[in-house]
Image 1 (cartoon, rainbow, N blue to C red):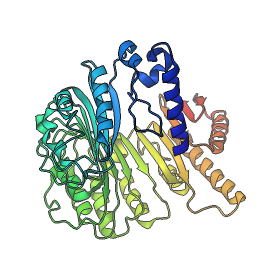
Image 2: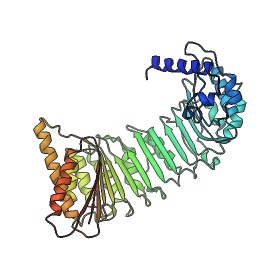
Image 3: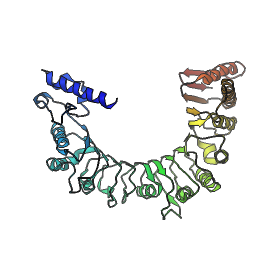
Length: 448
């Protein structure tokens, strides 16, 4: 929706509110009023409009608000927030505040002096707080977040002391984006952490301050030349899920040090997005060492954007396929936007039922043509080879009694999956043991 359409829609809602005779709760859809509280005003005016019927007849319990704060005329935002808090009763609140600019808030104000005292008194029942480009004054009051479970900090451009998150007993889920100055003191209650577009050095200091992490999502910037990368082994003893989007260049000592020294004894799910910049042997060795150190209880592996024509990727995956944690205990493998030749290469490695004996699910989500087919015939040939590789793998792996195997494909073009189903029907007619084939949309399930 462009700007003109949005203004038109706001004006339309405004006119409906002005004309309506019954309560606003009956005039507008409940999904608008019950969850997110907005006051509609005409786009051509800054006049705040809140009809008396809202205050007199609206018995809704408002729990979510999304404010966009500009240095010019913050009083209007203060009125919206004041009305929201008034109608929120004593319920837990979700508050999302975006500051277009943190300039103009150097005097210690959060929004406006007319509403700041009430906002501070209300922070004690905020369950989710999301701040974008917040002024420094916010970090003097975070200790008031007694019931907050989710905290998101984005574009923090001010330098603040390390955050004492142990003061927040209920805080379990934290997201930090594009905020290189953020640091934590010990944060024992944090179990889910997302670090997005952060320097790898900052990310390291943050996640090692959370010893009880169970879920970690990492997306780190490259070319971090800061000193202090780890030289000794370190452990995240309770981490069960790691999603790591890497951006490895030839001089990334931080990445190599972390890969060489991290230990994850409780890891069960690894989502690995390696990117396309891992080019030197040092990186390859560090990645291989990391996979070799994974625990035996790893059961799920997700691979992003892997390319068969990359020498480094090829060597790494061949090393990985020979490692005991992979070969013995993996139950599911997911390929996300991987090249078709790479996926086919992996299927060939899975033909032996003695390799990955516990594997019961292969999922393919999206694909990338690498190399690109020059003609339609060459594309058909690639898919034909792909189907045959898949059939050969399935024929061998289902030759075991009491085995259930699922092949799932989440992509638009599933013609090759039809060929696999047809081929499996032919295979079942030539073998001595029964195989039940269940096809539901993008999924084939084989039961022996």
